[in-house]
Image (tube, rainbow, N blue to C red):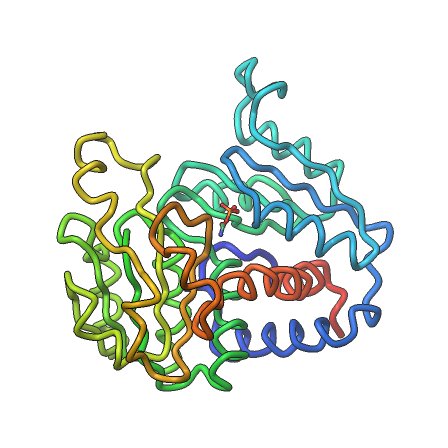
Length: 301
Ligand code: CP
């Protein structure tokens, strides 16, 4: 495993190895020492969780971090290309974690540099480290990844986390409900891939009829910044709002997840229910990202 660009590049065995390492690092973070290793966080797009949990993960393992937080004040403003910027950063660091608005940007960078590259989100395409921490979270909550019923809810067109998660779970015999407004449905190429893989899924526009039947409700924000037309966003922005009342007959083991940030998709009265799991999910980013960094830096025997 040289880079982490897409969930489609990872076998079920490799996913389970990363989950096991994350679990082990959560129990004992002192087992690995990344001192004298430098991670470059190269974020062309906004982030709170991904960048800060990667930085925290690296520092807690003794490593160092350099960061580009947005392009303001960098030589990107002078017209420097992505290739030149990352070729130089690769000489200052041992691993690059990159978020960029263009689909395919992380793979492109991995072809420009000789150090490992991690895709921290490329446009509406993929967010594989989020999916790995989501899998870790699901396994902790449900005790297994196998045979679960999951509703992926919200912006399935532009939401990169749900694209990666659908591929990630496809190897574990899931039953998916893809719940979205018709204009924000899961891209057809992903549905075709899932069909070829024999994955069971149904597309829905309403959530209330399936709430009581699922193990995981994975809610996503409507991705305002990716809409070409502001009026289209206004039409769908409040399409699904999860309240404590909606969950009153849910299964005991249901967990509500969200990659965050939320805007108004989940009301705060859900936070104090046994179903809320999104803040635990965010914390799990530390352990999974430690596992990813250590693996790609060749520190795992
Ligand atoms: N989940 C996630 O990617 O959050 P950030 O955009 O804050 O990194």
